[in-house]
Length: 203
Image (cartoon, rainbow, N blue to C red):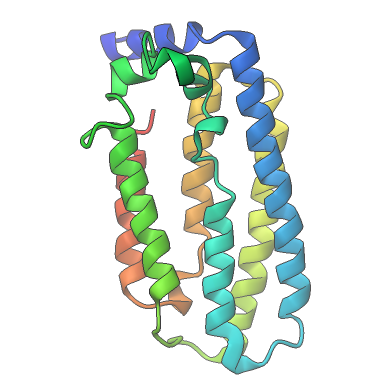
């Protein structure tokens, strides 16, 4: 184990059981909410007019982003060291920089993440594939996102703090990889890549 790995392990081991469980519960709730919404999208897609598919793809992508574990309530470090403690003693801050610092790992990630959301929201481009192909891509995206959310839910129970932080990064990366960027403007692929690069330092 190198020095960096030891630092991360020490930071993770300092998290008490209660904050870890609270973060797990919040992530599980986000996964469950995504599954509920994804099921609604799946049923709505049947019979949707072709001219609405691009709008549908944008709404789906934003919903997927909205249920990802990016909020403080899904982070055991924020739960344990936030509030009155103002990050004092936070091992994540010590190893990745304080989350409110402009150049910290989380700040760089969340900025890229928000820019991706903004670009999707403002996208006015047109699909570059036939409607039937787009419809099939959307069905596949929804189905895969439901399976991913369920798998993440199942992995939470036995996860240590270290496992949880890696699971969060994996879940976010896997979910944004499911966003149907082919149905959106070319800018989305660039924004998506920036988010994935920032995720490399998430944990």
